[in-house]
Image (tube, rainbow, N blue to C red):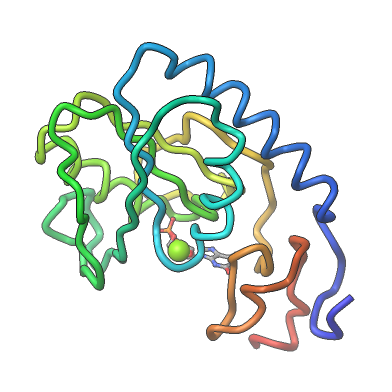
Amino acid sequence: MHPHVERILLTKEEIAVVVDRLGKTITKDYADKNLLVVGVLTGGTIFAADLIRSIDLDCELDFVGVSSYGNTAQSGDLTWTKPLSLSPKGKDVLVIEDILDTGRTLSCLTAYLQEAGANSVKLCVMLDKPECRIADITADYVGHSVGNEFIVGYGLDYAQQYHNLPYIGVLKPEQYQ
Ligand code: XMP
Ligand code: MG
């Protein structure tokens, strides 16, 4: 285990079970849909890469780089580092992100995708931190719920580190205080 990690929440093997469960549910739900998977950079990349391989359907894949700076759920509150490359118009968009925390980023992105003409927009997150929610948003597919702790690994970072840990763990508070 990395010396900055206090404890492991999900091992590599437990993550694989979660991904398989979500993939099977999504495969059923999107059987007759026009699926566009949109991963959110950077934290959502590893989860998105695993999850699409457990979705047994034809689908398109794109990535967006966004963060939110406003206190509202307006699409105009987004800062873009990478726009969509594919059009969401008429597509059933499934957004894949590492964690739903305050919910600001995903509620702004949902508003943007709806304004851009998506047929439907759903959210799939590996982790949900409901205690910290500010925006009025819930994820449609959740891997695992966590408390108010700083989580790293499997795409989640602190100061650009720990993205590559194969497990999901709690960062020792002395690393960020
Ligand atoms: P919200 O939901 O607050 O999430 O708009 C914004 C982004 O913050 C990141 N985030 C975390 N990253 N451990 C991390 O490594 C965490 O506990 C954590 N909470 C939020 C995440 O990338 C999300 O996209
Ligand atoms: Mg993120």
